[in-house]
Image (cartoon, rainbow, N blue to C red; front, side):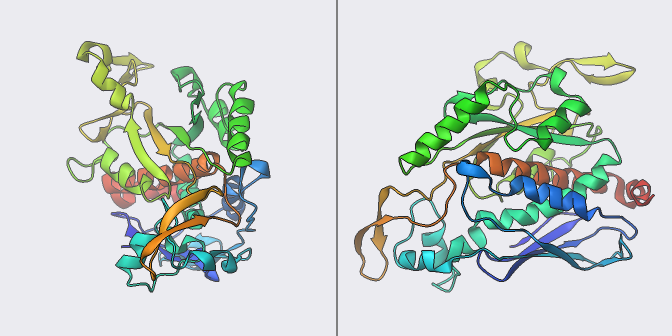
Length: 368
């Protein structure tokens, strides 16, 4: 379905080339102020820029349509719509009967009996992630009142790798610097190498993927419910709603399998009269519940499937092999554009889990 969340529920609607896309957010209490400039700033971070992104450039003009009065939430569902302005639906006529490899064209055609909207990928388009950014910007405004910070960097583009997060990076000034960058990396020397890799793929009609590393800082102990609402399962479910995500790992992830327990068990220590862990191999989560230490995870983003090289497919009506060469406006890499979306998804999941833990009492300070 198109709804997610336990105590705060969000419902997405619209498609890539429809007149609007939108989100209804149900469960926000009355009295919360929303900084619309903050939302615009976050949408701008996701917007394509320069030679490393698609030439489709939506202004992302949004409107809070209901659930908001005199600059405060009313307690009714908050509905936000974004207008689609820069669409070229004719670019997709050629693929009506020739599904594009690594896209949702074929399974969507079968699932919806051919009635799905294929323009721009329809509901499966990365365009829909603009709604996540709106949701995340609203959630982040609430989390900031509780000193909860979220930041990401580009850990890898193809085989070019940035340094990993370390504890010395986990301060407010450094994380805010990362969040203000359009291409955030920890080591400045890798940025031109990563950009050159993206341009090299673009110049040959191809694309590249990569890995994003994210930290959630100051999430209190005890968020997450055992078994089916564990922190990892809630976050993973939401992260996989982002098109192009193909994997997620927490802490050292798969690398844990190569180590002894004595090497990766995070010891508990006192730091400034607070219990925390001495290391972050487990990613700040045990038993599906937050430990109070930094929560670390990595997300794998596949190469953009829309490439201009000739590819093999089938013709659905003629029932025979076919080839296609995708034209139009596409990203040679979407890793850097997916990064603010991952931050936004994280903010929503943390907020929902905090409400599950504290219910309405936790919200009271948010309306001050």
